[in-house]
Length: 106
Length: 341
Image 1 (tube, chains in turn orange, brown):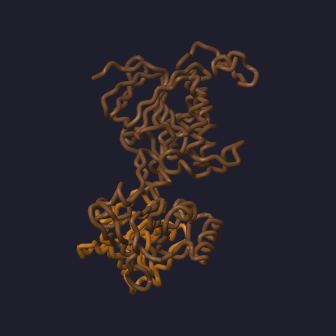
Image 2 (cartoon, rainbow over the protein chains, first blue to last red; image 1 turned 180 degrees about the vertical axis):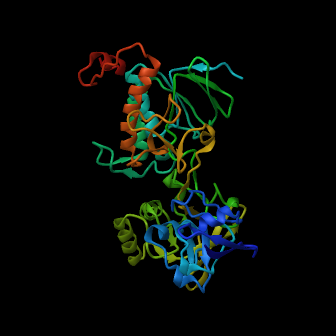
């Protein structure tokens, strides 16, 4: 289990024991984190699981693949640390990861 | 409750694939009623890109969305399909006699041997960018599709997005509009490289303006847009405009069909590749709405699916009749039905 934290827009912090290989989106949905909609179910086909990776973690998480970058065009208020949480796979080196939910999804 | 309309097949969706299904079913004497949420036939072709050319329809090197729809309407006219527009399918059930009952949100009832779901992306809606207060300008200054090019004549136009629609309309409306500004959040585009090159060439000639950024707010009064606030890498700027076209794709809303108990695959209806039948026998799904291994969302794939679906529907509707496969080029009986003999 890897510990990750998803911070809702109202600053409520969800500390989650996440299984390696699962996505950050799946963990957000399972824990009913408000503001993560994941309309397409994790197919990288919408932009409703948009998160900002905490600055301290941005480098470790890495940057989006071209397909995800395309999808991010549909998100609201995209920033340099923006990712779609369905495309971030939990793994050992992400233990302690913090992501922030934006004000709204597209 | 109204008196049910008795027919052979109910087709949900009057896009290109639903329309062509009328033709295939018609060749086998199967009468169709079509239900569509839009106010006219054509689905996305008519609603989103009526003037946009399509290049991958066999034997049509180039045809616009609306022209394709017009041709299909002409082709199916001999079969007198009946359309029910501005309707959404609400209810569905199997009757004791083996037929199906379909109900619209307006309360009309249809009884049919088979139901064909040709609903494309579902009852689709263009995605609205989550810009605060945008609803005050929708329909007056902000549009999600180009229905009439004239709407943009001599306007200061702001186009937002980085896909084919955004780029194509930047190129196509530039000669018409007073000014065109394209805003996209990054200098890379999803659109066809050729269109992107053309846009940059126009920018270099001073014909269009391109800004990297995201729209964060709108300025104006009484639904009349005067400027958009755009946050870019160098801070926020106001871009003067009185028309805005945001292209943020479509949302796929399957709608009430999702509650029919059909097997779904990521919001699409799973079908077999022999009959394009769903997990409910007698209910078929063709075109963009269906899924099977190897599925390609192409209009031509939907046409093929319509032809194969028809064979199965014919067996359901007339189990006692022998299916005789015929070509329209040589069969006098088919030609009679088409009114050409």
